[in-house]
Amino acid sequence: MKALITGITGFAGSHLAEYLLEHQPQVEIFGTRRWRSPMENIAHIEDKLELVETDLTDYNSVYRMLDQTRPDAIFHLAAQSFVPTSWNAPAATLDINVLGQTHLFEAVRALSLDPTIQIACSSEEYGLVLPDETPIKETNPLRPLSTYAVSKIAQDYLGYQYFQSYGIKAIRTRGFNHTGPRRGEVFVTSNFAKQLARIKAGLDEPIIRVGNLESVRDFTDVRDMVRAYWLAVNRAKPGEVYNIATGNGIVIQDLLNRLIELTDVDVKIEQDPERMRPSDVEILIGDSSKFRADTGWEPEIPFDKTLSDIVDYWRERVAAGN
Image 1 (cartoon, rainbow, N blue to C red):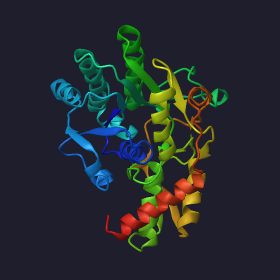
Image 2 (cartoon, rainbow, N blue to C red):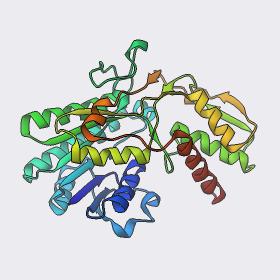
Image 3 (cartoon, rainbow, N blue to C red):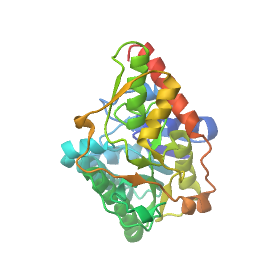
Image 4 (tube, rainbow, N blue to C red):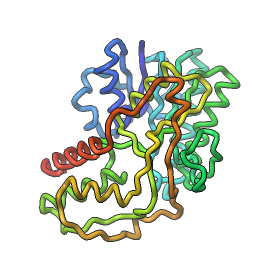
């Protein structure tokens, strides 16, 4: 079996590659990268992968890549995935996320390939969730509150449309928040952990700067999330949409408190206006019963283990001068 991971150098992509190497050794792994992609997430496994220089916003580049790799499964993870960036660069977010996926589908059609394609959609699509709508089912209304969310709805519905119109075996996974080691420092768990690690090391004053601490999120460990992606390709039903979530929410203030306990530092908490969003999704707790029923997936890694691993990761990074 040949598997293609778009965005293999990123957070989830690198963990998925690790999962396949360890648990699915029969799979030949290909990954897309851009010339400017940081390689540190896959440096330890790069010699076990086949990397192909690809620009998803260039159809000819995508066509050549697929003609070269001819995968049996595609995990489409490459995206502009940071919500605040989508307010600063809405056109680029739509270009990368929507046009990139369209090129992927059109090249699959042009080459008469027949892979199963997992599309990494997002819980951000639900947006404005009402208090009586949790845990959120796939049938919940989509009320996006960012350009990123709009781009993910477009990716989601393109998957549905191409399945209905052309038989493309697209499986749409609406992943709720996922985190773990190697999560980018702009994302909340890593951002807090890095700030605390620097304070613990005496590099910064004992002040942690935060945005909205009142929102509620449902966090899955990234290693459980990428295992879900594998099960999606192998057991889920093409054309369907699935939530992937634990069903447990945590208030961001409580998340911060647990990280402070793990790092054992005394800090002052200050709200940073630059970290506040124009509109924030207040609560995201997912109902993943449909996905569990179709694939047998269950989250296995306790959240305290996830947080501990993130803290250890940033302690090592800070100690190394990063």
